[in-house]
Length: 272
Image (tube, rainbow, N blue to C red):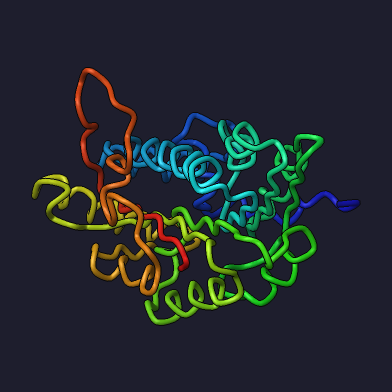
């Protein structure tokens, strides 16, 4: 980190990590990111609910895997910029000895790596600059921190929908899981246009906003339906309640009942 990694940041094109940071109330973004996010919100205001639901799911899924499932190792790919309740913070509250490896290919995320690397004394955190499309590099780098002889939870939140070819995305997930022992987990979320999760007006607004996003952003977005998303979990033991709107995956109980569904899918699967 001797050279300032921010020198490689492209401030002329919206980047998903910075846009997501802005939607979650963060300050690590540029005017181009805020413009893209504001345009998306103007057409499809529910994108803010989706961002919050995704972050809420992360917390619940990590608490489950670190708590009930007893996992002590996490490989968070496409981690994005640090906000509140990052994977290592949630996991190490449950198990201070937890080890976490973050992976991203955004130079701005690298610039904030020191914030991500703050670990409990008992555990550890590390950061790899790598692309999801190169799983071998990710696995090689993660092996310096993680023990692949013990279960690992692979976190793929909001990243698989940036791989346009489904077979390629499916192959990447399969390669990552093939390396891991039984008892490991896949934790994932994915953009969707599933008509059971929203009315026709919201679906139309989402499609219009996404078209504008694809023109503005560095990486287009490719939503998938529940059946296609569910294929990422082939051969795994899906944890209840299975493939579902991410706001409805084991939500905290309140007097107001279940939270509204959002156009984002989530699931957690265990390798038998």
